[in-house]
Amino acid sequence: MRLFIHQLRTEQLLFWRNREAAFFTFFLPVIFFLIFGSVYGNTLISSEHIKGSYFLEAGMIGYGVASTCFAGLGITLVVRRELGILKRVRTTPLAPITYLSAVLGSIFIVFLLEAALIILIGRILFGVPFPSQALSVLVVLLIGAVCFAAMGLGISGFVRSAEGSSAAINAVYLPMAIISGTFFTPKGYPTFLKVIADALPLTHYTKVTRDVMVHGEHIWTDWKQLLVVLAWGIAGMLAALKLFRWQPREA
Amino acid sequence: MTVAISVRDLRKSYGDFEAVKGIDFEIEAGQVFGLLGPNGAGKTTTVEILEGYRDRTSGDVSVLGEDPQRAGRAWRSRIGVVLQSSSLYPNLTPRESLRVFAGYYENPRPVDEVIEIIGLTEKADARARTLSGGQKRRLDLGLALIGNPDMIFLDEPTTGFDPGARRAAWETIRNLRTLGTTILLTTHYLDEAEQLADQVAVLRGGVIVRAGSPAELTGGASETEIRYRQAGEEILERTTDPTRRLHELTSAALERGEVLDGIEVRRPTLEEVYLELTGSEAGAE
Image 1 (cartoon, helix red, strand yellow):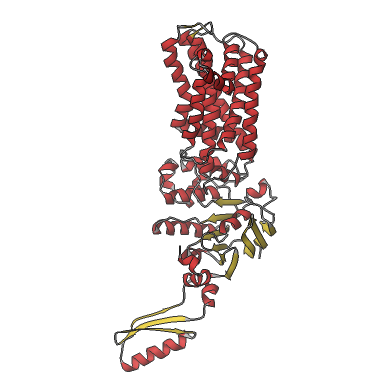
Image 2 (cartoon, rainbow over the protein chains, first blue to last red):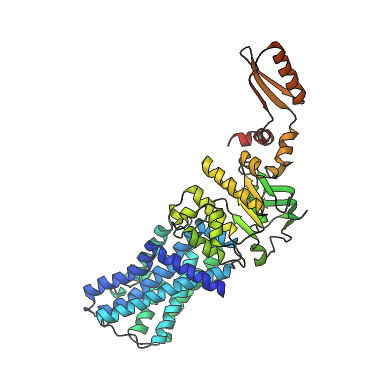
């Protein structure tokens, strides 16, 4: 436990010290919320029967989970693996499971802070009330964190070089974030985009988040959506179990 | 004598390719052991097996009394490892990195002491990404030392260094030796092995082709070279009895009232022995 706390603090130091990564994964969803909230926060989104700011708040939390737990974690793991840092950690008495738990715990903290900041900004600037089902919201956030982190672990095994890691992972998650209806409602999409959107975990996760946060629904109401997210999480975990490596690929 | 490492008939295959083909050696506690050989000779494979990082195909290996393949965390805390390429958190300073790694061990060395040993006092608070190649390597070494290990593995610790950085690293390694740390060093630089190692094994194509102290290795090559100029002519003699031959040469010259211009007596260096042993493979590097 002492080692876990030690590593968790190290991970937090490493995350905030890396300004560029902290900007893209932590601040960008917050900044987009501010920008798009100012643009169409007061516009009624007729297909969803809610104001733009309500819609965006849940959307940016969905975008946030993808940028922190999926992209941020995935890139970090590839870079550390290729720099030989993971290999070096394995030469120390620190247990691998303690190390990985701290890496995951740290990114969960980052995401929860981000979600809290988005909810706070929504309340102060755009008049979005705090969610009524606080506990359900927390559970939704944690499920998202775990599932997208599993996918982040999985994708790190597919990316070979540190240099290409942000390009490769961003190429996956940015289009996903946009298609999944985090910024705009997918209800008016042409059929081919709808088909893609329906297959993506973030589409379903954003819907669950929105239903629980905005419509005050219980988490189990959207059990079908949750199943899709979980299925993707399991797929990520299986890929990670098969492909995760401690030593650099390019050696 | 206490044996820190013992290796018996160690073999490692990758598919059909046998990288290590049955090697034996022992390292005494407190010694510096140099594993020498060209690229692809099996040095890194051997070291990674000893570090517990790779499983062997067959043979017996004991490092600090345990089988690295099965050893646990207590054993890990007694070894320090410098990998072949630098592996640092780019955004942490040496002081921060050392603190982080110190936290993994029960009885770490004080961070300031390690900073001094590796000679990074002036750069202790600069981000690792801003350090020079040599400084990064010294930080790698510092991270291997922080746990106060009994045994250190150095995989090509000075590859790519300029001569000054190289001497500084050697000095550090000598200091470690005086602290009683056992060191296994791989290198393809002969002068490095000659300067640092008590015992050397030359590895080629997965087998040890020669082993002994640097003096034994060079001493085994029997002949000494004597060079001088006489009447403007360059003369090279090889002899197995340099004392007698030199005496003859110099007394003859004195009698004639001549000077033996540019007289030079030399034993073959480890480098020459090595080139002879490893053939064109080493020459190609």
